[in-house]
Image (cartoon, rainbow, N blue to C red; front, side, top):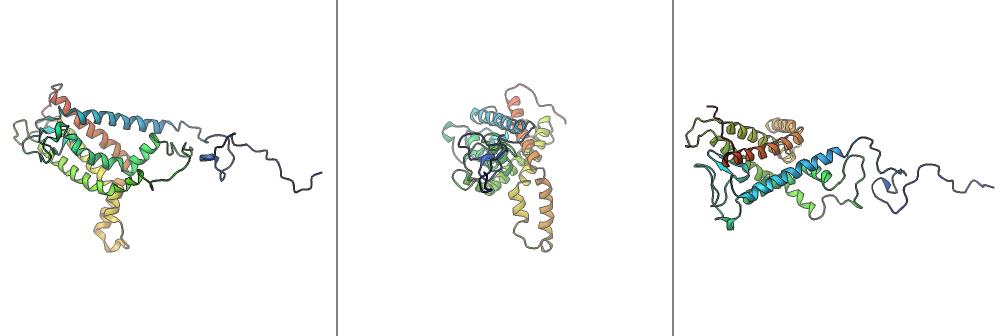
Length: 283
């Protein structure tokens, strides 16, 4: 006879057998047998993100180590600007610093790409993108990640993500130099002003997207309007903060658009330098 104090048998779903104690199978979660409750094709977004980023990594690695076909007057590839090595071919009047000799014969792109790539790798959006696309941390909302524990960005190497704010300043400098490269694109192959080719428009679109992505950065938003007690006492910073905030709402779109535009600008210079195409002159 039951006394009323005996444990009752649960008739609900049971967790799968085995010592699974992570994700949706922790002791604090409901006993749900399914690994997740998503019925849509949730894996498409992280898969597309991974493929997009992987394609850019492969392309940029090839171009960075190529050490050739990155200059065709008056255009210089954004992957190779500013020039920090003596063995970098750049246009007359372009930013050619020659600070590091010939850098042991290596591609001069390796000296400069660390700054824009460091800025993107530590960017808040790109962290989300490759955390989900490559590390499955987590792969999608409401989907358990396969890792046994989560330490966030409190340990090496992910704690280095905190240097993003410093890469922001470097990215601003690189964007300023790429702006000057775009201005020089209004010269012809004889370095005479008053020229506009299709490449000029490609570089114009690229630099606009580069600046929009850089200024939409979360660090920029904090620098402009952070640590203020009263916006009313800082109307100029408040107005700037509002503008940056509107850009920040489109940070993901600008991140992908600028990534595509910088690759397109480099590829356009490559096609010109190899003689595959000619630059149509607009005036």
